[in-house]
Amino acid sequence: MEEDILLRNELDILQQVHYCLSRQPDNWTGLRGHISQSYIKPVQDGLLLCCGPPKMMNSICKTAAKAGWNVHDQFIRF
Image (cartoon, rainbow, N blue to C red; front, side, top):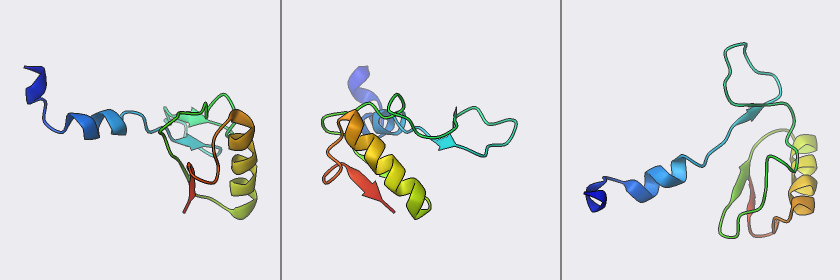
């Protein structure tokens, strides 16, 4: 039965994680290149978690703001 699915909420959240590499190995199946607005369409109750060098983080923050994210509440740098 559907209500018996173990950790369903956590698994639903995990399936929405996307990784993007600008320097990826040949066998990489995730997103490739630099983060663009098409990769980060805003989600009302979502979070955008990013890590990387300062120049990249500033670029992603600007891109996220242009895409409609609330970068003060939804954009987390680590």
